[in-house]
Picture (cartoon, rainbow, N blue to C red):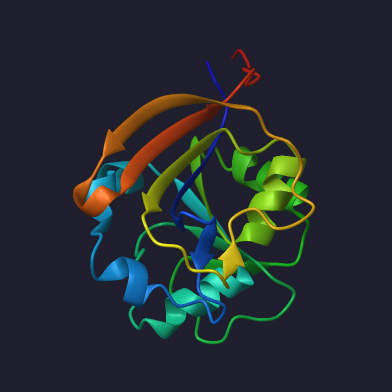
Length: 183
């Protein structure tokens, strides 16, 4: 039986940005490309826990109500979380320690929500198994990159490709040679 699946489901511009420099996505993504068009609800239903970086957490909190009630969420940060929603915890540990903690909790699928620095760290420790992307046909120029400088190599194979409204793509990749564990 396979171990934990580390799954990133994210929207990205054609030039590889996940947000504008200030973290916003509403003017190029949220209004025109509903998440369900990219399989988000089905994906989210199968998630046991969420792992995100502090910048992503802060950007989500600016939108208002916490969109992930009932999903245990760990925010990788050294700063305390003010008014954290129920089930949201801060951790100052490194990604490998947090990954071990989530695996010990029995999490079978963890959503690596971002941002780019966290995704880079998870690739570095071999904990990114699936990359699912809504590729939006816009070039942002400046913005927050999905894969910041220093991201290590990750070889993937395409599992799914579907054209969506307004020229967007829904892509699902799987890491090549993903190790499995027997239980």
